Length: 137
Image (cartoon, rainbow, N blue to C red; front, side, top):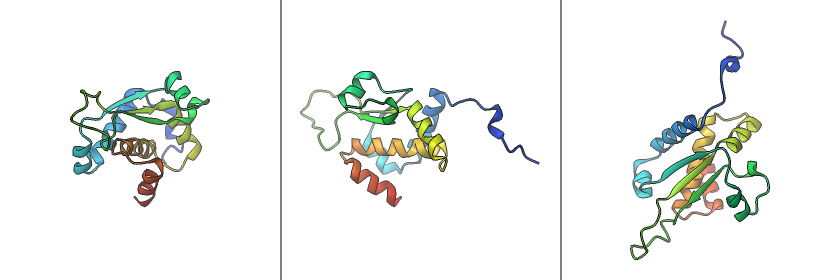
């Protein structure tokens, strides 16, 4: 008989575990999307920095699970000075909190969802357009 509580000996996923899940989600995206996105850097942190939360008017750090930082491909220009590499931040604690609250997806699926959402911003898509695409997938 299998243990009904396989999580009993488990520990919470680390920042490195999240990075591996994000990289796996990235690799599952179709090659044309990855190629068009270019060199997106993934950063995993427990929470968004206080300044970021203030910039978005967010009081509760659990309300922000991911963030795209950089110039979207729609706004990018070869005439602009060298931009910083586009970055996708995934925030571990808010993602874990949502995962526990939902209970209907794997952690890998949720990380993939947040990553795809933030990469969508790299392509210049709005939150509404990204949500529509994710709902269709």
